[in-house]
Image (cartoon, rainbow, N blue to C red):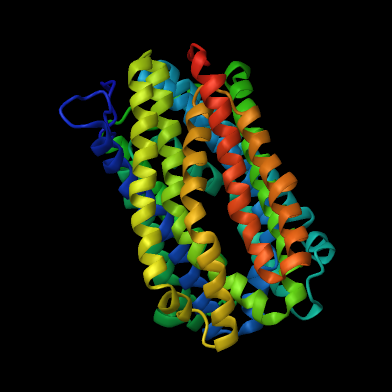
Length: 462
């Protein structure tokens, strides 16, 4: 089968027929919509379970979240490392290396998924007991969690495959198949809950089975699509031959991925610390914090997407040995972060009362949530800027210092500032911890970028 050095649907930032910011925007829109769609799909699934079965069922499918989050932290790290290597290989138009990286990364994802499967078969019940799962939902929680974990080998490979595709600059293809996943999930979940069209009535397990069916169908459809399009990333004899542990490639994936995954874990732990402060002010404060997190989650999507885009296209520039284009990627991505972020945040400020009102009806809780948004919302522009710089530097394999900067800003600034100001000025002091931390992390990332990283010559890692 003849293959070309170009992936159909991939953005070509080296094409001078458009300004660079337009190519970045073409990549960013499907990526941001993917993040929104994924979050919305999970929300709809939870609504089906909560309303059609009950609160206990919703609690059962939520009880395993800490373990799932830990597994996903490793997966995020693995994906981050592979995306950088894929971007560099694709920038150099080295299709042989691209396939080697794809084979090794898919193999690593498969191994991680098999480890999750073993945990699912042998230790799910004990893990849930250790997490303090209430006895009345334990059986349902074990059954649900075990199904999810057993499917992990397939799901992890699928998820990594989509990040590999994005590494070539193609965000459209993963988005199309995420639409398919979401639509199937939304249709199948209520059908299995109620047993419509002769399907079995599975109760709590409906959400797990729907997750498995929707992702399995989408994965198979993606493989067929890549094969039909004669994509360099389609499964062929060369990729199957490379489906093994190549230490030279794996070492760099781990080098980039482990710090990235660790940072995700540390951010999660910091949120646990912050919520423990918030809980001292009663259920109204806790409810406000939860509602604002929902809003902020959508505000963060552009910032997170900018960081991913910056990392991918900086990696392509390094692979292509285009240092001149690398500077343009930095400037364009930072500019888009402020342009898109300012628009979104500005609209949220204007309609803040209405937006938090979607989640909250109690007047006291509404006032707390509104105050939280007023204090913190603007600072997510700085969060986006630091995410871009971190992503750009990660593209060269420089991940340790940016990761340490992020962890330092969280644990040496955000949490202590929130605690000290809480004791001095009350609840608002907790919220101030966020913008202070974002100012610090941006300052640290910029100094390392400007005075260290920028002065180096960056070469391909493999």
